[in-house]
Length: 245
Image (cartoon, rainbow, N blue to C red; front, side, top):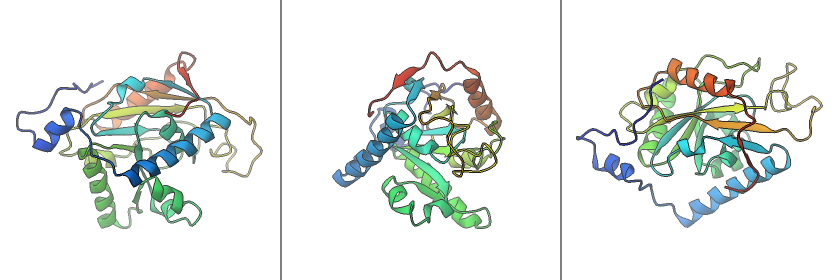
């Protein structure tokens, strides 16, 4: 598996890339900091009450500078779990139909998610991917669920190659992420449906494993293999996390 060498920037890197190398991210406005704090507070409340997290490998996420997280997708609340698990604010790429949902839109706007339309609108898809790349270049953390949808079987699906386009010309690492323990929750497709089923457990322990950084040129199959290896690891040695990061 290819590993991202932290100091591997070309001599011809732009001033912006050298700035990110020194760990200087974009300066957040007070309103942005407030919205990020609100999102993280909600995420922390959800995980404390219902989904206590075991987080492992958090040191693999750079503390500053741009990074792309690539995660498997098991449930509708995966993004809340990752928001709570990460030490930094995370922006997510989500389907535009969910972004436009009246009951969800106010919250995801505060979370600064990046909506992406269906493949039937290729120009808008390209613009959404460009926004992701620009966010990473500016020093932000972006997360993509590379399977392209929530798993219907509980198993890891093939990864789509859209994130490869996001990372073209971007000098930042890719960090694979594995979510384990959400299959069987009411937010997963276990039983052939979402939501409309009786929960087996009121509280469900979830493991979030962050893998070693990979280069921005890593292919979809390589990142999928890294996520698959993380899912195969025993979760018992993770670190229990029940506090607001």
